[in-house]
Length: 442
Image 1 (cartoon, rainbow, N blue to C red):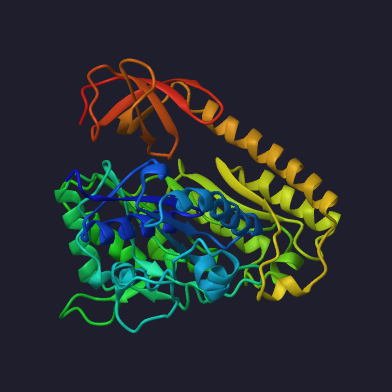
Image 2 (tube, rainbow, N blue to C red):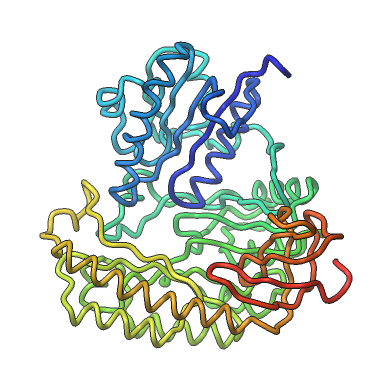
């Protein structure tokens, strides 16, 4: 395939975008494109964007500016913009950046090959009636033993800071049969760990298999996936506290395949700010939920999202967030300074001064960093299981993820990608653990 055209994909933002990028690459692969990690040799460049924070949108236009000179030297190069910025800005991207040929939204990317074939400058940001997943090619370009599987898209929560309901649309859950079929196909290709994805994944309610009537929630789907022979691990992200149903909490204690890690965004510890965010939960209900989850799975590692500097946030509101973090004890967290997104209710409110928001972010990040380090240091001396994903940088070293989603570097000259290996943790560094095998690999 020396004459194959080459596709370079750059992904911004969340795991949903990582999954979408993989599917777009597969769609273009069916038309003869092979992926490349070198933008200079690409015949097509695809930027799959995120619109959650302002800097991601700015970075898109910065990257497009850098592509201008490259495309000038390769007149046949195609430049496409996909994802949530594409959905939000559409024709404006073509107007603002002449280097762009194609703009395609996250619900229309199954039509990307047809857009390329048609040629010319085009925008497709429709929310089509057809199911895009049934029109995408089978997945054949897996790069390791772990895979993402989108089970739910869109969101009906309408948090005051979030553009997802506008860029990804209303909540839609994929049918159970199709998900089970795709999961089995992934396992047949060597996948041992599947992460179920959704903008609000624990709101999943997919059409049940024929003859079983109604819908299945996420817990029932996970329980069925856990019966697939060869599928050793299951995870899911991202969740909303209001959709943690009893059966899903129980599944964390019942299923050894469901890993002891849960990302459960709270955003703030202030009830006043949570109400302004339209989160529809308060700090105490979140803390009670954490107690129930830990009762079901005592060793679970929790992570969360936090926004500081939300419009109207006072020093007292921020202190309430710090108090919640202290009360929970997170093993990881993603924290951001509030960024106004056009079209969202919060964007109409006066912002917190930038210097105040910056100082709060630094203080919060220092706290969650201390908690993360404490959680990692507590792993030293313990035995965990690691799924090898790739060779490490050192000779005889393998790298993979632990049950708790820690990155682990294992001294194992006999290790192979795809092995599940019991290891003993020997050291903790900034963002990873070191370990050695303790028994024969599974």
